[in-house]
Figure 1 (tube, rainbow, N blue to C red):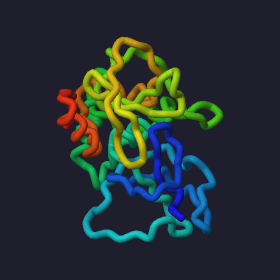
Figure 2: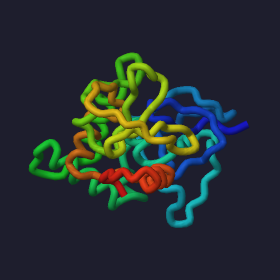
Figure 3: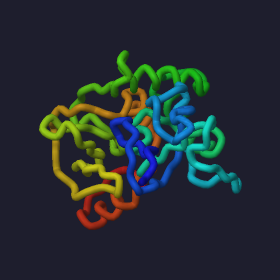
Figure 4: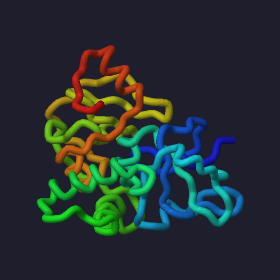
Length: 219
């Protein structure tokens, strides 16, 4: 049986065989049997690389933080995570610099400041997923949304289209313009992407771009 350690754009943690292309954590979430007991423990929700300086970990070791996995960085950002300041230093600094620009700050924000705001933007009072509404044409590439007729599915904003998310990758593009949608990516992160931060996306999105002739701004 696959472990329950894969994060979807809605922020939930599911069990699926696919490993994903990024790792991350929210603190210790599992019990000694490897069962998820809570959705989060810390405000510091990170996005990490799968390999770093030869370090080895046993997944879901009792008493240690829970290793979570994401299809790509765009998925992790939608769930409410941010780049790790250690194993993804360059991405972390780029994220912080875009945060500074988006919020018209004089100095680059410290990690706890961003974590506090991200937590306020991603979690409701009852630990649900916080969302907001916006028009599709106001959203940058790399943001996740849900549609009114398909509330249980997440879609990546990609050029002039939406790509349906799945644990394996993205589905065929659907052209949707001008309508109001539910935004899954936290509002503060959307502002960071609008200010120039470029999320990493799964290769399936890039393949669909080539096949369909779309021209999103992501690489």
